[in-house]
Image (cartoon, rainbow, N blue to C red; front, side, top):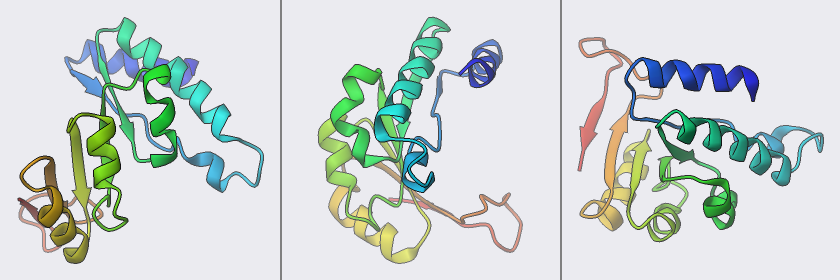
Length: 142
């Protein structure tokens, strides 16, 4: 948390308005070395640090942490593939539609737009988030 906290402070000093810590679902890939509670505790440390620096904090993915969102201190959500995995509604309800959704496939994008395009901020991007003008660049919003 000390290392990531320094990054958070750097974001505040650079004029950012918010941060979204990633990999808070690492307990799912840790071979039982981490638990959901470990990741929630880590997230609480990060949200406190960000709020102290004047930044909002977005929950990145990890639908399993939605029940703990208030205790952790998340302010909004950033999702990847909520349309693909049919999770957009869970995030929309939990965050009163303060959700930024990124889809990487046409089917996920269509699913998200059909169900939530009038409510959530949804964009389709190429997975590598390529620069405009490159052959792989893709960006559209509904």
